[in-house]
Image (cartoon, rainbow, N blue to C red; front, side):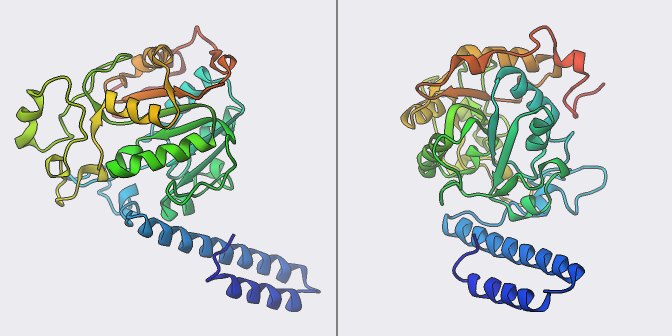
Length: 332
């Protein structure tokens, strides 16, 4: 719904439309479209204000999603995507992985960007929705996600009821939050989660279900030796002063929380989630043919009462190699 600030303007335009478009169908259609756009603009303005109030700036605008990048796809050391599309985002692989391993009817992708994963899941028959903090991303929705993604802010509360989705996904978003805000974000993810949560989070240290994490690319080069020689008990998060920066001197990709697998597991446990190590091992085996296991630090969690039947895998005999899906940055 439009914010109080914008409501008088939207209502005024609506009244003018109703008086002036009573007899002309074409005018009525044009005016209805204008009303929807005004309402959408008000929601976007409200979302931007909420994001700034939450301490999150407009980092994730057009340039972050590749607008204005070199046509060769070279980022030149800057954060953001060299290009952002369905292939580069690995949406087909992620969508197949979720469809194969979670026999769910509904899903929510938090931090959905332009909604490529939502688009893939809907094509696979899942009632998928998405939300993102970036008004730019939502305004540039993938065709198959239009009408199913919206601006959403974990700190302001997501616009869905408790336990609304059997599966909630959070792919490469939680590391963008300050460490002290992580518990609030996880509590909101727990609120809308009906059974299972799948996340990918850059992590370091020992991983009981797949490849261990690492510090390379996550901390400043001059601090690498220090962290490599720390005890395995070190869990982080790494102090901001030691985090890697890009060519502009900004934190790489806007990453604010880089911590160990154990640290993240504990934070999720505090929010009411239980980690599913055995399920994660199946997912790592699934992505092995695409050589993604070293890059996707993945987690699967369940809440109390989650139905084991939702983990009934589809097509257990097929692999990514059979489907011809591979990481776009890895050679043919």
